[in-house]
Image 1 (cartoon, rainbow, N blue to C red):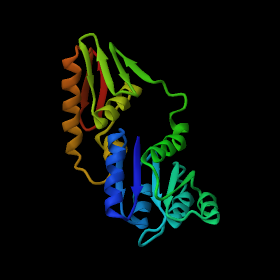
Image 2 (cartoon, helix red, strand yellow):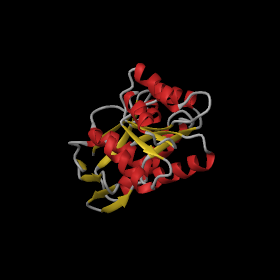
Image 3 (cartoon, rainbow, N blue to C red):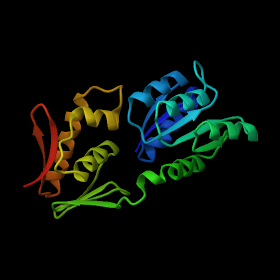
Image 4 (cartoon, rainbow, N blue to C red):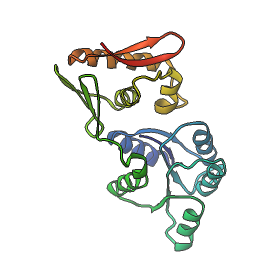
Length: 221
């Protein structure tokens, strides 16, 4: 799951990126509201966590802007303001939830899980294709020759391929869904190589095929 974090306090921003990454989220972080709007309107995110008090554009204005642009992703507002009127303003502006500072990390993660629950409702806990099973909860990839734990980005790539094995996934789609704006597209080739090596290492009967000028597909061999 991919999160956009907008928080202008550098230390808190870095700490929250570390927390989300440790809990298997892919996270892009920005430090002002204008950047947040750019990322959210041009990128593909599952959730946004927006601080209210930010330079260039505050979080509430950023929220209103992306809602006017038709973005329906879940949004959690972070703020030091705890007055009821401020909470109402955030919710009326399109926020899905509101968390005041200071907050416990466990509560933040619980709130994110709650507002993104509709995205995962009805989704199977495991994916199976060929002789492989991929756990969405543990990131374990299993086959007759053993099992291996995937990294966060390896998991996201293989999940995309296993969810629709007959479809071709372009490098640009991987970039948009997983890495965002700030990475070189060559990183996709590197991670495809990692996935191929792990599939081979556990005796999988699956291969990631490259289709020239198109992308990648998963096939049973």
